[in-house]
Image (cartoon, rainbow, N blue to C red; front, side):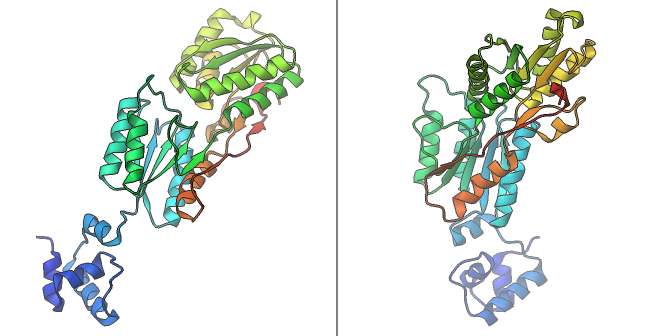
Length: 339
């Protein structure tokens, strides 16, 4: 049977309250010689402290709730890696939760993390909020009133002010990419976009389209797809069927996320379309595998791990809140556009 706090107190001849203050990290720590006796007794008995008791004694759980849409998507896994690195620096751990882009699940996760009294919630990715629905905003506000801190790595959530806001430069990055491709002589464009309800996709489409308009080029065709590799495969196959290899020469595809672009590349290869000889392709995010595709993928880098790191660090490093920041996007040219 596992040793209890009472067993430890009995072994070293102190009260359970004194043993608790030592083992659960209370600021009301007894004299050092007593603390040493308690720690030795706990070690001899194999006592494992109760996490809930420690949280009460320290007024902190040392936990951070990290909410992502899809951990298999390198966009989110890179942000998560940065967030965990920053959490480690504060001696905290992250509790990872995946929404699968389900709004109801996102709301439920905020309630769960509130009940678990985590020190902070980091909300990543654009949220598709039903018109007039305030449940997510209300849940986050309730958590703040209970003393929690919130960081948002995405577009701002209407009606809610987070302690920290990392704003991905979706519009600006796509605009810069459009300008670069137009300057290289590309003239015929299709954008493979995500769902219209997704803010990140909408902003990237707008930025790229505006760049083409400024350059005096025709508006791009818009093709919708699921925001995933599988969605990219389906979109690439649809494009290939509509544009056989003999008629696709000189066309440029802008795919609004690298994870989709990888799928598009796969489909184009399967249909015998040469990239970049017949079709150029560019993505967005600069996920690690973008360098390993064939050919390597031209994309827009967003410093994803740095974004995750900043979101957590800025909650606990004494920075006055609320605050907002962004990282400059960078166009990374590779072989998929002929670089």
